[in-house]
Length: 425
Image 1 (cartoon, rainbow, N blue to C red):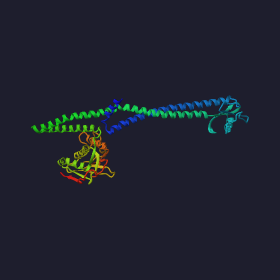
Image 2: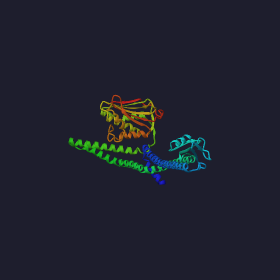
Image 3: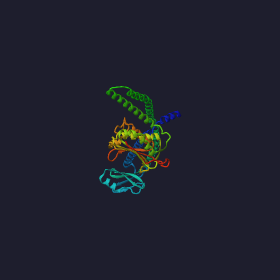
Image 4: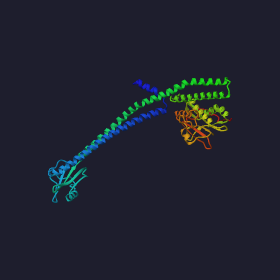
């Protein structure tokens, strides 16, 4: 048992918070479904038993009342039964007087005048009576039956059904949770194996792909080829580079399943300036103005510096891919109205439509992401693992804006930096 638990714990080490939440939710839902089904079965069986009991009691009461009305002696009727006889306008209650409120003279007179049978229930004296009025020869007989003991049996059965329902529901939930754990275990194992396979395959593919890309670049530099062949070679270099980027994205996605390494205080204002400095040359080559606009005071968050730098770099790369020459990309860092730390990347490109903004962070969505659509999905995973959220939308006048919100720590841990860094093409 210990070895099994250790094995499960080892397999779960590669899960993200979303993975754990999904598996936990599946277990709870399975347990709840099993519990509801078992509780429903118990309730159905209990309800059926109660209905059978009531039906049987009512049938027996009617049978006894009819027999007593036709054959019993009014002077000594069976227990819990009283007989009142109306003959020739004279009412005879027998040796045992009926309970207060009986006989029901209106029913006696009705049956005496027109014949037939009347069967009613009357609540009096703290109990319920079943009353049968019918003709016996030339006389009219009213039989009154006290149903308190039958109703006590019904209440006892209802209590027993309720207790059984509560116990059954508790046991069903426990069994359901156990069954859910066993049912979801293969899914959890498959999820862990999938992540390990992606991580292992991506790691093993990185080196040979990098070698192919390097050899293709060397071949392009050394070879003397006609223009049409040179174009094919350039395409080969571009495809190998793209393949390497895809493998890197897959590896990062798999590695996000691991717990975050030791976190540190990260200044978003310094991070924004560094990210702009790293991509300024690339922006200059595209004829795009890339600038940083940051708060006067440090904006400190708790996180992994390399991961947060990757978030900023990916958002800038995405903006560069969709901003035409002469456009502007602004990387801003500060605090929001809700007190959160905010990193915002704004461009003057084509912008986002409503449908694109809704799915832009989905894996393999090609609406605005480069390559195979993993970059922005990875950005969202990194942000969510830091306890934040990311939103994409269109800005007034055209262009897109990506807003990252992270839990704000304080601005006292890092000395102040210049407010703005701006570099033009």
